[in-house]
Image (cartoon, rainbow, N blue to C red; front, top):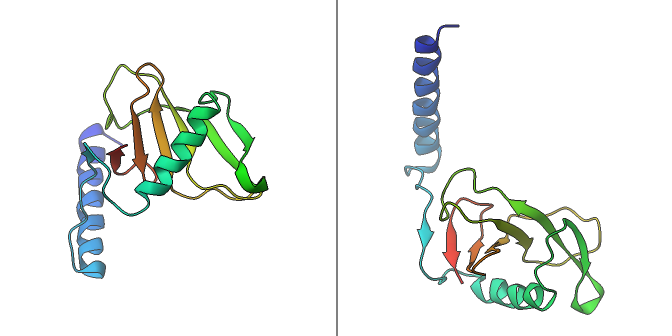
Length: 133
């Protein structure tokens, strides 16, 4: 397939997806964003989880870690910032907000921490939006 044809088909696919999303929900999908503060629901939960991860020294190895109350929480290790939504040039790690039994499925709530500055963001929707804690 020629590059020009591929680009045109990709643009048409994106336009169709937005049109369908608008038709189904009645609204145009919102763009992802990064906010300077955290005022959405669950920010308090993210701050609490961040305090516990900080007390554990923000582990950098992916895996399950013991959590208060007998549950576990998971860190996925390195967050690559592929979409470039957070400041570039930093090294980030990601941590789950909510604990659960060891091995249980993960949800969309994450904390992302800049390893150098310890700046921390909460993402309630799996890296679509970021709220600075």
